[in-house]
View 1: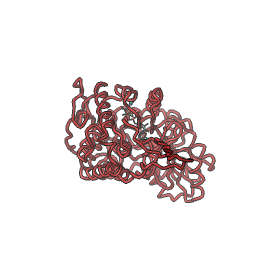
View 2: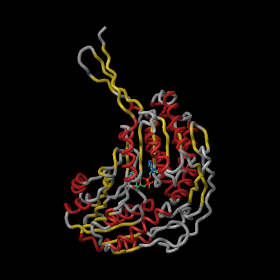
View 3: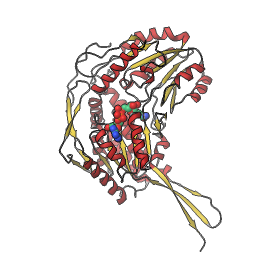
View 4: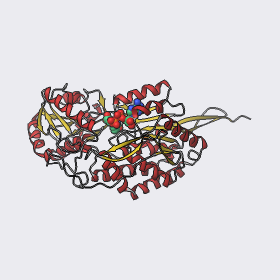
Length: 493
Ligand code: NAD
């Protein structure tokens, strides 16, 4: 059922006000300012958190610097740090309900999604990196004559982790876990609208035995704190996930200081469906690709490309199936689609659909915001779009699917690669040779064959083109957080 008026929400679990976490203790901001945290499901206040100033950023960076230089964390062996990461995993499992409630209420995620995707994947990320200590072993190199060369893998120092609103827990964990395993200390600035799970993680990391000052959290406005954090002389590395515009700005600032940046930025993936696809499986992948996390997924597949013989049949199937995806009360375990995460996000999605229709798109289903409280938008399918349609060229970041037809494999690849982004892509086909051939030609950091959003902490993801620099997850994600140092010994006495 696709409601035209928003659902009655069940009473939510109360969430305590938040403060800044610096050097193992809770602090108010230096000027005492607070900011409200809003429920996307109701539009009303959940709680409030401290609104940090740049002086608070200085204090958090100083704490991280002191902890790094003191060696109480970097001086542990990778195995000892891994043991603490395993404890973090265990505590996350024990506190699954606290974390899921925070993530669900703050981001507007259906509670079941918060439990089985967000908390589960984030906990698995700590478990996975806990076992990767040997990746930090370095090497001995064969050198000529009486010399002996050792290549050490050393932590980079103080990491500024800046994360977006849509998957706060997962995208924080894919930075915190490898950064900690490698021996770094962290200042984390979660998204202004969705800071709650980072504050819970501060408690969990402390309780697991991460020393004071190793993980610090500052909550506040990115526009006010971000530049100061990125250019702070005591920060050694920036791990950024967010929009392409802010990511480019961050990379530009950091490059002036020759500071390494990983930048996981916006996506706009194509999902290519060939006429030989298993239709049931393909329909599942198509719907998952654009409604998962209410479409607020950097690796969403909002651009559906369909081989022409299947086009009309697939549109008819989507017209019937999409309104049946359960949307509504985020506390109901059966709900699949929740609200968008903020009033701004709702306004952006509404605007883009209006522009898409004005440019010739034909709405097959949906096409409007849901009346009533909260920031709900109907899951929407727009057919017959030209390749310069506004909903094709821009990242919509909502439950909106555009549909285009193609005639040949070459045309499908050209359409898929025609946008500036290159984060993810999908191929639905029963022809294995075609899947190999096409996946090699797609400009994307990850390609799914016969499915969508198949994620695991061991599998790296990241962008090409304007979707960013670097990879997270897997050993590739750990490599962001160490650098090599060669030590060459003269063995001649
Ligand atoms: P955003 O760019 O608006 O914000 C991201 C973070 O940057 C937030 O913490 C924000 O407070 C902070 N920020 C704002 N101004 C800053 C500045 N001047 N300096 C430093 N930091 C600043 O992104 P968002 O709206 O929170 O997230 C949605 C975007 O993130 C989408 O484009 C989505 O595709 C992208 N994203 C990418 C990935 C990926 O892995 N590639 C994952 C999730 C989201």
